[in-house]
Length: 129
Length: 376
Image (cartoon, one colour):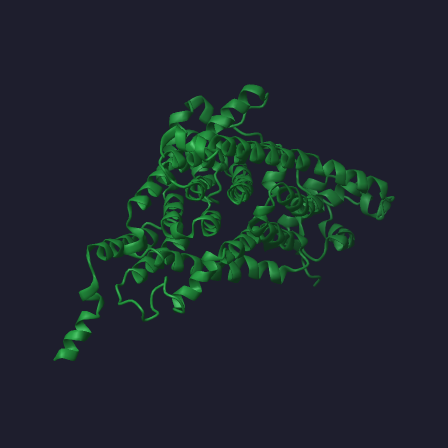
């Protein structure tokens, strides 16, 4: 059997249509869920939001003028991220703690080698001298 | 003298015929493409050498050939026929995949789904050409442009076609730089190819990266349970990577484990192309349909991106649709290069990787769906 007759006999049209709907539908739902994922995670985080732990000491220093002090004070912040962390996570943490100009600070810490690249996007703090 | 003549009659030189010579030439060509042209060397080199080994003629009954019980090659080939190697490859792939670009651009996932249309188009074409339904499904999955997925589904549905289907799938993956760009250029205008993607996507937190494999495995595997052998290890590998508490395991999965599986997968698939079982009219049909499947998959991704642009305020570059096939990272790289040719400042790679990652998930779902259809 060949041609359209073979497709109909083997239920090909229904398989193709159903398969298309399943894969399109499945990935669309997954896309929708992951687009909302950060909001869902945000809801959980709001509930347990604690007051900033590093208060004035961390927030008041001008990290760009005194990188060494900044590195010393900020280092404990990353304890919850583990020894190796992504800069994106560090940025988020800085923002959460209301530290001044987080992007510039991280960039400066990186340029001054206080943040040491480990490859694959991970960093850790320079070991104290 | 008689013993010497008997010995000569049992050598490969005596037993060889034109079919074996032809296949050995194909094996040498694959090795040449892998080493000299660097076309997908990780795949073509083991497959090419496997083809050479598999087509050395021998007398039957000695337990030498890949299709003879108790031969060493037969035991190694068990990993293919049972679907073990593809699962292991998916574990390693998961441990290597960074989903952050996809999580930052979820709408691009739809292009990964659209590119799977090549699979269903080929399913219908193969049925129309007289392939049995299970064979047609195995041929169709070539359109997913995912070697391990093709091998996995074929092992389950039409094990006698593993050789030609695997060779076709991997050959077309290696030929991405030749197949995809003309289709991309044909289906898009220069103005469309110049579209720049926004660079303002949000940063993805570690928690999102951690949650995604769990959400993904639950959603996809509940939808198509037959895709568990592929997507289960895939998301597990990714979870190990993102958890950062089992770095050793994640690193092993993404290096030693996947490399070992790739070696044996490629080598035994190559060795399974014995001339007497491989050189058939059906194999020729599979190669033709594979090319159609791959081209349609590329075209449907590009066309779907153009359709999306009708409704989107912020247009997406339709070239990205071609990266919806799951040939990682070959098709993403090709999209990037075609984009760069038009505008040297247009960097599409990270966006294309998002489509690529969703293409891997999409083709595994398709494999699960087709498998469950055919089991009825």
